[in-house]
Length: 307
Ligand SMILES: C[S@@+](CC[C@H](N)C(=O)[O-])C[C@H]1O[C@@H](n2cnc3c(N)ncnc32)[C@H](O)[C@@H]1O
Ligand SMILES: [Mg+2]
Image (tube, rainbow, N blue to C red):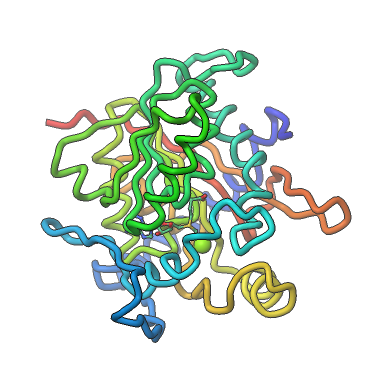
């Protein structure tokens, strides 16, 4: 569990202050479609397979079909805690601790209450099988879970219906940008481990921001683009330990904390807190840390009133 010092005066803030001018330069040098150039992985999708996903029709789409095909291929394993999503299951208590702590402070809720998110409308963007949506609903939130892969949504709905405390989650196969078109708003918009899989991270952040109510909160987690993340999140996790299917992540699609902070800022979200997730190989547990060199999570708030 993180101490309040960790969450309020961490090393990430000093790092960001030191590196933001470079991040600004990086962004001004690059084409507007994507903050970093992302080579598209060559993945063969069997046209006869039923791993179909719906696509957004209107505004610029966040969909990266090759990335979605990877999730469609393993969608029946979402709730297998020893399967390909084992790392997400293992990280869940730690990321929920961060979300509980930051949202309760922001919305002045009691973090010790059994249902601290009572009265809050939260959307889980890229919810997959609902690993995060379900505990959010149990904590009292009115939850909407969306994912671009239809099979994920079917599995999420089936699983949530097994328990009356989660059966009221609104699951929908759609994208953030489509809900923006529908003018939906939420007190908190959460997208965990999704941004590294979308077609355009800056546009995606704009959609997350547009879904966030004035003075609402936005929470994003992802993987840093560092040498350590290459060694651990790709070489170790995919090739040595086989925690994730090979090719799950493209290192070049990762965003540094400076880049994420910058694109959120440009989308009117001010990052207020950030924490790293670190894995202890002896206990097999994840914990919150100020080490943001690999996995990290950012909490931001939206201050701009929309016309
Ligand atoms: C690594 S999983 C994370 C699942 C969930 N957020 C969690 O952390 O437990 C990424 C999910 O994002 C979904 N996804 C990818 N791009 C998307 C997009 N543009 N819009 C909505 N969902 C997307 C994938 O289908 C997949 O279920
Ligand atoms: Mg990922």
